[in-house]
Image (cartoon, rainbow, N blue to C red; front, side, top):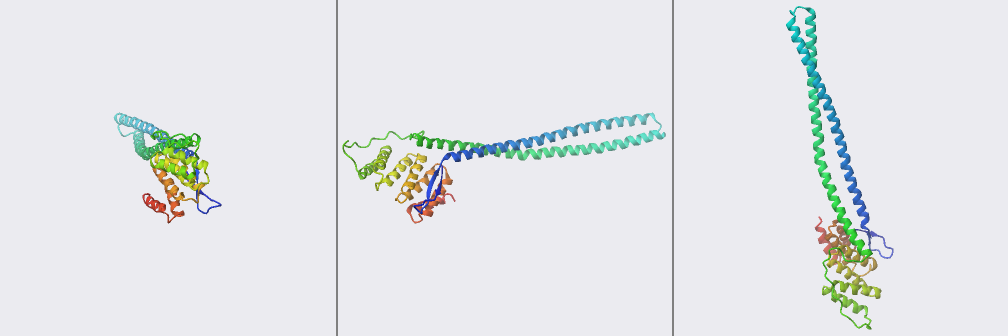
Amino acid sequence: MEFRRSPSSGHKKGRFKPINFLKKSNAMKVIVLFLAALVCIFSCAVQQDVVTLDDNMSILERRVGKAETENAVLKKQMEILTKTGDGKDQDLRSKTAENRAAVDRLNEEIQAVRGKFEETEFLIKQRLEPFESTQKGKEDKVIQLEKTLLDLEKRLARIEGYLNMGSQPPGSQAGPAQPAKKTDPGQVLSDNQIYAKGKEAFDRGELKAARNLFQDLIKNHPASVHADNAQFWIGESYYNEKWYEKAILEYQKVIEKYPKGNKVQSSMLKQGLAFQNLGDKINARLLLKELVRLYPTSSEANIAKEKLKEYQ
């Protein structure tokens, strides 16, 4: 999940607008497919070069064989002429000279062909060595990107499950929350009472019960002075359950709905820490830097500065 600032007409401090994970997921898919195609194209190109060089080698091998055969035939003819003639006949001497010249030419051609053959072998080896090393690196990169994409899709599914169903995250180990203390059905609690009960439940570790009370406060007393704090503690309840994706969304509500409240700095800090816990250093660094820029004298900014040193 990514966050970016969008201009606000009523408040000069920057706001952050959540961006759906789906865009990032699609982008990762494009990168994975591109790298896979790149490996395939490069592999095909090198394989085609190897096939071409192999064909050239076959042609050269046939030429060498033919030249050596002709050379052997000429040598045999020279031996026959030498044995049957007296060495004085002009025709014999001319034929012998021609044969010797032909043999010399064939020997030269054989040497040239063998040189070309060795050159071709060197070219094949030169082409294959870098391909074998770079192909393995690209395949490892594709595997890593596929793993990152899978992790991203799992996180997206968890957030979509929350947005659509409000269910607990997969693998959540949180036990059943203890019910809040019962009150008289006819008694109407004030926002101060609800907030106090919610905070007491939170401090006892009864996170779900506390969350329900804070949600009731926001629903029934939206203008309460405790509304922004209640929203912040909802985010904290998910953070303590290590459901960081959901905590990030709840902190974002504090930033967007209560931009002048006293929990904006804390929400930005906890968003950065949540991203850090998710292994998303890019968004973590972005949020911490923005916190320092917008609220440089706050205690949260001092904490953010210390965290940013870890990324240097």
